[in-house]
Image (cartoon, rainbow over all chains, first blue to last red; front, side, top):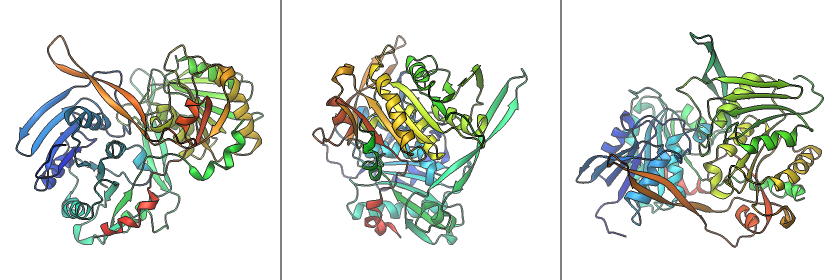
Length: 259
Length: 259
C-alpha cells in the first residue's frame, strides 16, 4: 500500500453531485485529507443498498487537482463505493469513507431506506472506517452550521483514538440554531417505523396512481438512549452501526424448525 | 379486524411477476391460505430496501378469484409491501408475508442487496410475520423441488407453534438433489463480502463502461453455525433476522465522541 502524507477520504452521497451537502463536506475535509469524490450524477435518495447489475456503469472524471479528484457515476451510492474501492483504488483503499452530508434524516428506522448510510455500510463491509452524515432538514438550502462546527472535531477525535479501522457511524444533526446544541449523544437506533399514507390521485387519462407520503412513528419516545430522543432534545446523535441482520436471541427458540 | 376462515398471506418477490419462483410459491400456499399477490411488474433484483418517492406508483389488478387476488406494481418489492399493507389492506393486515421464491442466493451478506429479503424485513417493520425464500440457483428455470417439499412443512410448524407474530426468516435452499438434503439448520449470517471485479469495456463510441461482477468470500468458512456452511453442507438454512443496525457493543467505547 502506497504511503501518503495525509489520510485519503473517499466521499460520496445519495443526493447527487449537484447537492449542497456534498460540497460543504468537501470544503470541510479538504484541510485534513486528500479527497477522492465519487458521487451519483443525479439524486439517488431512498435507494438503500441497491446496486446496478443490468445496466453498464460509467465513471466521468470532473476534476483532478492537488488533493482532490472528483468523479461522477450513473449508478447508486453503493455503486460509487464499489467502483471507487475496486476500480479506482484497487489494492490501495482509502483510509475513511464519508457519505453525505445528506439533506434529510437518517435516524431510527430511516437508516434502512437511506442511500447515504448504505454507502457507509458498504465501506464498512470492505473493512474501511465509514461515517454517514445527515442534517434533519430536507431543504436543498438546508443550514449546515452545526455540521460545519462539529465534523472537524469528530474526525479529529476518531483519528486520535485509533478507531479508524473499526467504526461505521450514523451521525445526524438536529435542525436548530448552533447555539442551542447541547452536545453529542452516542446512542442506539430507536424502535420506530414510517406510517404510510398514500396520496391517491387520478391522471388526465383516468388512471389512478399513488404518491408515497408518510409520518414518522417512534414506539419508544421516552427512551433517552435513542437517536430520535437525542435529536428531539437538541443533541447531535451518533449511532455505531453494523450489518449483521441475524436475530441471534431467536436462534435457539426457532430450532423447532429444524425438520 | 375482519375474521377470516383461512389465514391471509401477502406474496411478493423481486424477480417480478413473470418469474417462475413466485408462481411456484402461489401454487404451494394456495391450499393453506387466501393469497394477496402484489409483485413488481418487472425485475427489481438487487434493489435492496429502495422505495419510490419521485415517481407515481401504479397498481394493476390482474386477477381476482376465490382465495387469490393478484396485482402488479411499477415500483420495488418494498413499495409492493407498503401499498398492500397501507392501501389494499389498510387496518386489516395480512397474517403473513412470503417473499420469493427468489432465483439466486440471499444468504450471508447477500441479504443486504436483496429485494426479496427487503420485502420480508419491511413486513417485519410493520409487525407482520415474514419469510423470504430463495433457491441458490440464478437460472430462470431453477429447480424448485426442495422448496416444494419443505415450504408447506415450514409454514405448518410456524402456524402450530404460534410464532406467527414474531419472526422474520431468511430461508435459502441449496442447489442439490432433493434426496441429498440433510435437513434444516437454524443459523446465523456468515461474516462475508462480495469481492468485486469490474468488467471494463469500451463501447462503439469509444466510451469506457463497467459491468459489475463479483465473487463471494466467506471470512469464516469453517464456522458450522452459519448459513453459508449449512448450504455448502446440504442443509436448508434459516436465519432469523431483524432490522436494528445498532452495534450495541460499541456504544460505551465510543462515548469519547460525546464532545
